[in-house]
Image (cartoon, rainbow, N blue to C red; front, top):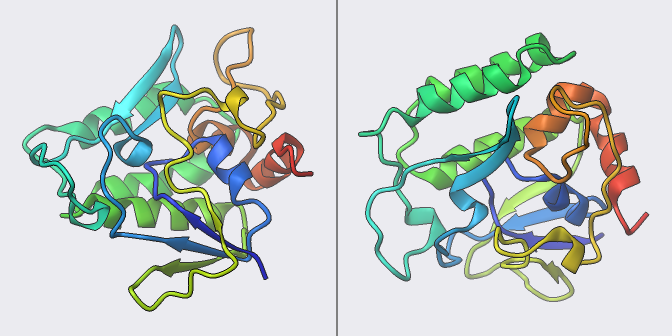
Length: 207
């Protein structure tokens, strides 16, 4: 049984899912310290003319705060912006009508903590792909022996080509002639639906 310790991202990119592909248990640690400019509150989708970053605004800029304590700032109407961006990017994709309601319902709720929102995002994505990995929230008593730790490995400032995890395998994207690799899992889900996991298998350097 393989256990992977991983960060919790906002609509994780394809490299993230390739990194956890062969895990039986995924352990997520809310006590990990928040890093600015991380994927904890941002993701990338492809619009008609560019790759767009969607960011969830957070309350304050306090240093050394655990991920599980980061609060979402609802003074900004970010939910409408993100929903509108997703609709613009993927409204004409093959699986939009099937998948969009999952996330539309998600944005209609107000999660106080970004951790709780991200956990629900990950749970929905795994459900759509029929991915049987067990999710566990780490505690002080969690056994940390014999696990693979990828926390802090995937950051916006470093390119996936620097790591031996993800190799781009093209699928049909909604916009553009050139394939844009390693976008948010949203990009792959709307294009491939339940078959997204087979693309991730082909994209993993471990397989």
